[in-house]
Amino acid sequence: MDVFEKLMKLDRRWVFLFLIVVCVASYYIDYKVPILPEDESRKVYDFIDSLPPGEIVFIAIDYDPNSMAELHPMTYAIVEHCWRKDLKIIFTALSQQGPGMADQVIRDLSDSMVLDRSYHSVEYKGREIVNGVDYAFLGYKPYYALVILGMGQDFRLPFPADYYGTAIDSLPMMQGVINYDQVACVLSLSSGTISDAWISYGQGRFGFPLFFGLTGVMTAQYYPFYGSGQVRGMMGGMLGAAQYESYADNPGRAMEAMKVQLPAHLVIILFIIMGNIGFFASRSKRKRGEVS
Image (cartoon, rainbow, N blue to C red; front, side, top):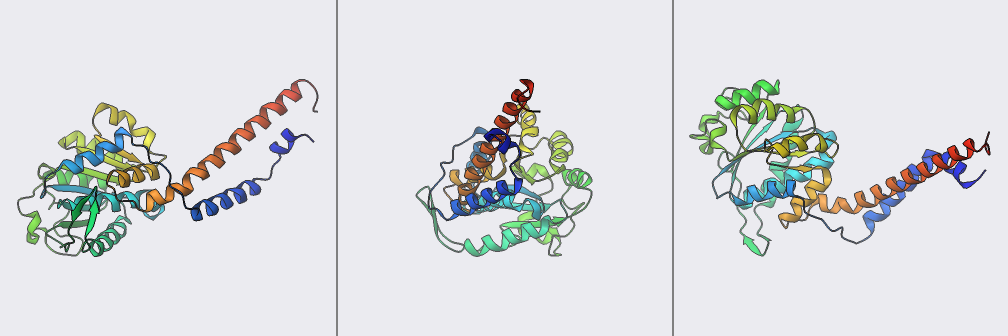
């Protein structure tokens, strides 16, 4: 049995074991992966960064725990960026388990925002994040297409009260805020078809600036919408989250995770190449009659 036949018959468990060893080893090695900028993710950061204090950003937490690894770091980076710039945020969750994701981000960052921090050599004083003043968390409602259309008329139609049961009209930051016309943009962090609904029933109907944070496997299918301008910018997977952290000068979970993702991808590519070499070499031998 030559080396090509051994490659073709390699037990996949060795591949998984080797991948685990590489991931664990790379996590504990102290090195940094260079984060290269991309236009589509840069546009998300630039738009948020250009907003004056007091503007409202609408952030839809449209993912579940199975996508936390890729999308949760994006949420942390964007929400902290908004609050450090004194922007206000309206949160919704159009996936069933999204409220838990949003609530965790709000609680964690509310604690860390009381600390002084410096980004791009600019000192930001710590401050208390107040519910109803710095953010409104509207919560979850089913039938996301109807919810998106309803919010285009009035946020109070699908959400008469917020996630905590407080009437929206009693929240100071919601005074005079009726629908999408009063928000600077909508940013959906999504792991499913809710992204399509934001394009069809949201941006297509009401014309607001729309940005996406997507899982890595979803990103390619939304490039036509990015090219047409319906989606102003988007972040794809762990790399997109790492890029946003890099732009914001706020290294976090995504930049740390790139230490593992990069060597893991290289190992997978290496095994794909080896497998293809083994396949074509074996086929060539069979054609020559060297192998039965």
